Amino acid sequence: MSRASVPRIDTAPLAAQIALLPGLVRLRELVPSFAEASAETVYAVLESAAAQAADRLEALNATSEYAPPRVVDGEVVTSALYRQVWLDFAQGGWMTLDMPSEHGGQGLPLVIAVAAQEVFDRHCCAFGMLPVPIRSAARLIDAWASDALKAEWLPKLMCGEWGATICISEVGAGSDAGRMRTVAKPQGDGTWSITGEKQWISFGDHDLTERIGHCLLARTEGSRGLSLFLVPDRIDGERNGVFVRNLEHKLGLHLSPTCAMGFEGARGWMLGEEGRGLAQMFVMIANMRMAVGGMGLGMASAAADLALSYARERLQGGRGPSPVPIIEHADVQRMVLGVQAEVEVGRAVIYAAAVEADLARVESDPARRAESAALAQWLLPIVKTMGGELAFNTSSTAIQVLGGAGYTADWPAEQILRDARVLTIFEGTSGMQALDLLHRRLWKDRRAGLDAFLRQAEADAAALAAAGRDQLAGEARAVFSLLEETATHLMALEDHPHEAEAGATALLDLSITAAQAWGAARIAATDGTIPVHERLRALGGFLLGDLAGRAKFHAGRARRGADQLAAISALG
Ligand SMILES: Cc1cc2nc3c(=O)[nH]c(=O)nc-3n(C[C@H](O)[C@H](O)[C@H](O)COP(=O)(O)OP(=O)(O)OC[C@H]3O[C@@H](n4cnc5c(N)ncnc54)[C@H](O)[C@@H]3O)c2cc1C
Figure (cartoon, protein in one colour):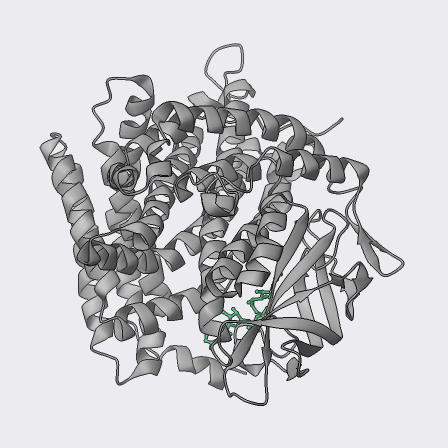
C-alpha cells in the first residue's frame, strides 16, 4: 500500500485569524506595501501556497525515506524531483513574501510569510529547512554587511539562486557557543581566513543552489567575543576551502541534509564589528526561531487534520449491529477536539507574535515601538518552544487516534512525529529558551516584555468579557495572575540564580500556557456569525477551559527550588 497523503489545508481559518489581528491595521497604516495585504490578497496567497504544497511538496515528501540527499564525490546530491520542486518554489516568489521591496522582495507583512510557511511545511517540513536560513541570512546581510556584499548577495538569495546556512555548532560548542574553536585570521586585504570544524549544519552542502553562503561565527585574535563572517562555498566558481566531512543519519527530516563541515583556510568577509558576532547573529536567530514556530504549526495542523478525517471514516464500536465512525466516541472526540483547539490557539499566538516583530521594526511612535519590541522578544522563546511541542504532541495524539494504523508507515503521522522531535532542540534547546526567558527577559529587561504581554492579554480578556463570555474571561485572567505571581517570585531570586534556574522551564511552560490563554481569549471572542468564526469561538473556548488547571501545575513546579533536584548527584 502506498502511503496516505496529508489532506490539503483549509485556508479559511488562517485568513480569518490574520484578519482578526489588531496590529495588522496599524501595520497597514505604517508601511505602504503592507497596505496591499488586503483580506483578498491574503486569501489568494494562501490558496496558491496550499495548491502548490499539496501537489509538489507532498510528492517530494513521499520520497523522503527512499531518495534522501546523499554524498557523491564529496558533494551532497539531491534528486531531480527535489531540484525541480525547489526551482518552482523559488521562481514562485515564495521566499520573498516579507522581504523588503528595495531588495526585490514583495514587502508583505511577516505574518503572511509565516502563514505561507505553515502551509508549505505541513506537506514537507524538511524542504522548509532550506528557505528559512536563506530568508534569515538575507535579513542578517541586510543588517550588517557592506553595500558591496549586499549588492552581490541579496538579489541572488531572494531569487533562490544562492543558498545560505547558519553555521554555529561545533563538537564542543552546542548550547554554549562561546566555547567554539573555529578561528579567523585577517589576510590584509579586507578578507579573513577561516579554519575549523562545524557540525550539524542544515543544508551545509547541496546541489539546489549554485552557491552557498555560510553565516559563520568564529574567534579572532583581536577580541574575546566571537565575530560574524560570510563564507561562500565557492569563489569565482572554485571551491573555497569548504568541505563536507559527513552527512548525519537522523531520526527524521531525511530530506534535509545535516552536514559536518570543515573549513580549511576558507576566505570569508567579516560582517559588522569584530567581537560582536553573537549579538549580531541574533537578527538571523530571531527569524529562525519564529520560523520554527511556523514549521511546528504546519506539522501540527497536518497531524490534527489527519486525526479528524480518519476519525470520521474509521468504523469501530457502537451499540447497534453496525460499527460507528470512531468520532462518535467521547474519548476520540476529546482527542480530536483537543488537537484542533491546540492548533488554532497556537496559530493565534504565532501570528500575533509575527505582527509584533514587524511592529518592532516599523512602528514610528517610539513608545509603541518599544512596547512591541519588548513583547516580540518575550514571545520569541514561547513561539519557538510552543511550536515544537505542538508538532510533537499533536502527531503523537494523531497516532493514538489512528491506533495501530498510525504507528505504521502507511500513514504520515509517524513521520511527522519523527520530524518534529528536533524542533525543541535546534535553534536553542527548550532548556536554553527557558534560561533566556529568566535571565534576559525577566532579569536583564526588568520584565518589560512580560508587562507588555500582560497589558495586551488583559485587553483581550476584557473584550472576551464584553462579548458575554465572562466565565471564560475569568479563566484567562486566572492564568495571567499566576504568571504574574510566579514571575515576581523568580524576579526576587536574582541573587540566587541556581535556585531560580530550577524553575526556569516551569516558567517557560507557564508563559506558553498564558500565551495560549491570550490567543484563545482573542479567538473565543469572535461573534460566531460565520462558520469560520463559529469554529474559532468554539475551539478557543474549549481550550480555555483546560488552561487554568495547567497553569496551576506549572506555577507549583516553578517554586519547587533546586534542593530536591540536587538529589540526582547522590543517586547510585
Ligand atoms: C537536525 C539538526 C539540524 C541542526 N542544524 C543546525 C544548523 O543549521 N546550524 C547550527 O549551527 N547548528 C545546527 N544544529 C545544532 C543545534 O543547534 C544544537 O544541537 C543545539 O543548539 C543544542 O546543542 P547540543 O546538541 O550540543 O546540546 P548540548 O548543548 O550538549 O545540550 C544537551 C542538553 O543539556 C542542556 N544544557 C546545556 N547547557 C545547559 C545550561 N547551561 N543550562 C541548562 N541546561 C543546559 C540542553 O538544554 C540539552 O537538554 C542542528 C541540530 C540538529 C539535530
